[in-house]
Image (cartoon, rainbow, N blue to C red; front, top):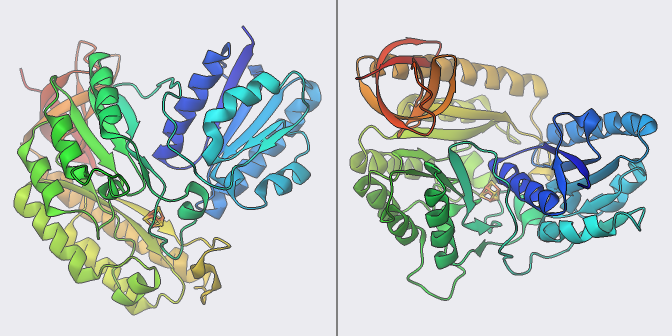
Length: 436
Ligand code: SF4
């Protein structure tokens, strides 16, 4: 055994899954997982730079590691992910934290094993590739996500929303080969995973960069839905301009594809959407919601909303409020706009932080109210629930339409699909009982 590892993951599901790959590589190199930072021999920071706060957290935690290294000088420190990929970040990180041993970017994550091999002979290894290159397959994965398995279907993004740094640190869209994805999903179902979540920055663009024009997201979903076994498929994230009627029709036609779509609108004002370079209007978005509901009645919907985008006025914000009221989301992920240098929005006129905070708290209150109303409508209904947690007779899981439900069960039923009738709701939480 070479020692113990501890991985600090920041940011989105893409990063959570990439940490599973980092863990896979570490285990292949003889490391085992540490329970705490204090007992590890190598700590890996898999970073995010989408919001400033994520970067501050990384720097704060690197400060803690610096202290730990004083009492444990052999501790090795690796930093990777989006923050490391930013132009000039490697030099800046190295200058600020000279105790870091390895820095690498998102495009060369698969080389982590090579850097581990060099660790004994080199004090510092820094390599950040400028461009994305080909999709690399067969990176080992150590999965820790219970009944769910993440599967990348593509990497990168071509959209260049004016506030977002992702295309700069993750590169252009690259789709994985369809047969490789199908083999992965088949194998994971065979291993007992009951939920597969397909990952991509914009899954609806899947296949656009491939030579075979028959390969697209709707066809991929259809092929996965035709695999044998009892399982659910989810995906994230969808761009509203690209989510097609074909995709929605395929979802409606199969029990295996979850009745749930995360469709980030970001803002309700057409003026702000244009400044964001989102390439749809409020009307386009609401039409898409109507189309989804036509094919999938009872669909669960969620969204990302950013408040305080540069120049956002009260009138603009009220357009967002109007969308939230009209759609009635299951769930809303709300954010305050955060400046990212190098993006066009960073150069626009900024909104005062007090106004941003006021708007986000009004939005959270509104969604809490709507969430409660939506939850109350569920009482008396029975849902098929995939149980993903069980402890001392208390079980938790979620329905196909992504409603989180807790219920009592004498037996450990993690990984099982069970019927649960909703009996009560409190603060957006659904409680139910097993239907015998
Ligand atoms: S679609 Fe827009 S917000 Fe999403 S990753 Fe691409 S550029 Fe960023």
